[in-house]
Image (cartoon, rainbow, N blue to C red; front, side):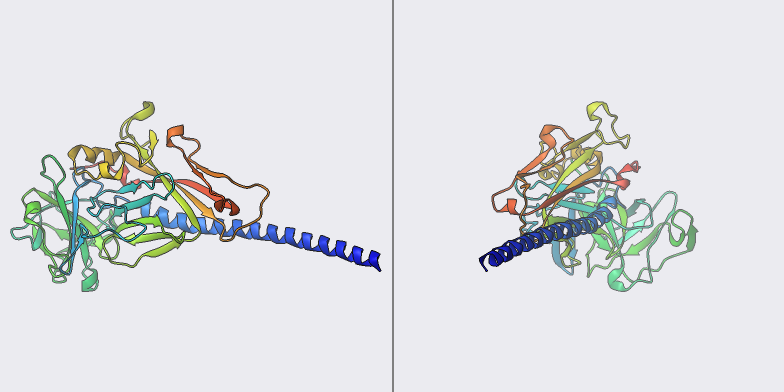
Length: 388
């Protein structure tokens, strides 16, 4: 009887050990699959946002760095009167027009990405405008060009423009987002082969603005040879921030307050970013559309404070940013038993030592599994040479 009990206990132990090993393997395999899927979704959303960075704005060397003025229904949206909600509370309350800028999260927190771009069929073509009172945009292009204003949209979704001064000294000045009024009637419709659609032929005609939504153009802007940049229908321009909240979720926040924050990824432990610069470093050539150097957003000269200082010299630096390199760390949703405990997470290991990033895991954090994903997103609109 004792022998039988002993054999039964041994058999039970073997079965339980086998089951435990099988269950651990299944969880590891499932966790890896979940991490790959989560990374793919997050990467796709980030790619869509960042590849469009600078759209509608990149063909002007003077728009970068202008202070964004946004008012909606009489309420100031930008600059903000209070801090952005977490995890974006470290971002400046005064924002300036940039294709992409990154707030460094330091040694233990995730970076925050801010990206701006329009969605227009006008191929980034600016319009020289004037207006005696600021309640309309009198477009005077030479030669006349077409812009794809959509008169069939609902009044609340009419097109947005960014109006920025071009005759500035010492700094880029202020720029304001305005909305076309529903009373605007397109003139002659012609076919524009560059955008494959019929567009309104604009030649010295006023485009009325909807003062009750985004207001009128400031006189300080109108007095400095302004240019208007077509951003597309109201819901289409991308002015958003991406960060990781305390729930380990990758969140998108619309800085124009058009949409509620959206979660685009889960189990995101950390996100870090590097700028890809076409600045002639390391034997490269300036503005040849090849990345010469990768720098951290925490380095001197490339912090968010310096890139948003409103100085004329900074406009060229912003134009050097031609790509963004992102590293995202995903963590398993549950603690797991592992014989190979990870003590640190290392990113950007092919860069110089000063540009790498390493995160030391605490005792509790070592109980989880981690997977690092890195990829490069080119800023395609920044390859367009400026014309003004």
